[in-house]
Amino acid sequence: MVGDFVRESLDLHLFMARIMKEHAIFMQIGFLPKDVTYAAQAENFKCQYDELLKEAIMLSDCTASENVLRSGELVTDKTLGAEQKTQELTGICIECGLTIEELKLNPDPGTIPQEIVPNIQALNEKARVLTVSFAEFKAMVLDQVTKCCLFTNLLPSQYYHIHKEAVFYLKLINRLQNNQFVNNRVELYEQKVFWDDIMGEHAEVISHLLDPTEKELVHKAQDFARQFKHLGQKLKGGGVRATQLETLREENIQATLGIANFKAASTDLLLGCQIQSMLTPLITDHTLREAYHYLRILKTLKLVYLGRG
Image 1 (spheres, rainbow, N blue to C red):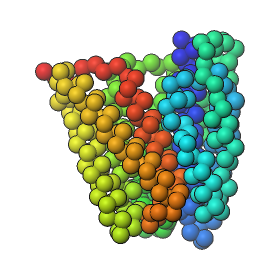
Image 2: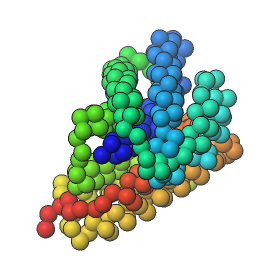
Image 3: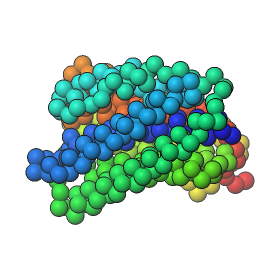
Image 4: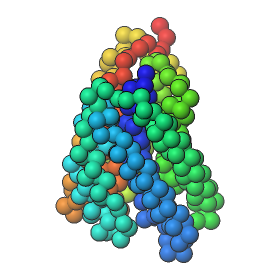
């Protein structure tokens, strides 16, 4: 139980603290010169998540799960280059050293000491407090944008998307802190519904940030958006029969592999200046890591009957 609590906490923060800090970077990129106060707040959140990620990395060597470290969800072979290029393009400082440190992490050999638990509980609480504040900031900016009181270079749906991810992160932190272990039935349902929506939203946003001349890529992104909307609807409402679960899992795995390959190729093209768009390579690498995260969930969570009949 101690090992599960420690590993699950660190696995979560290694993945989500980086996702949150990149949300802060994307927000910072999107604010206009007149909104320097908002840009400064985004910079502050970025720095705080850097510190959270740094602490998680320090605690994770020989502690984090091997399947997480090897999944590609924490860093890919493109992350460092994507950070460097995005920093060059935007002028925003990105702590690339954390990526290098994360690549050096060793997995848990099965000997997690009891003494580390207070450190993990403190890390979880730090992440919770920070993410509550960041979620409130995202919600405030979204409200200002939708009321036409603020203009940014991010789409309103992007703010909705990143706010939803912060809320989901908070839910998982609270469960860990409260020792609430969810059974596979509930976890699979929640994860699938959430990540199907996220994958579909990634595809929609990418299709809108590509230049209209990139017709082939736009059509591919739109196809993925439709595919994940269809997959998400299959589970919502409890209409999946027990005999269909393995088929549904395989469909999801193939769709997620497909969009991961699309995001990986897009990141390479952006790094090579071969796409006309409003995308930075860090955005597509960010969404690639989320696809790898979902792939690991699909491959490791035990499927149980979620429907009727």
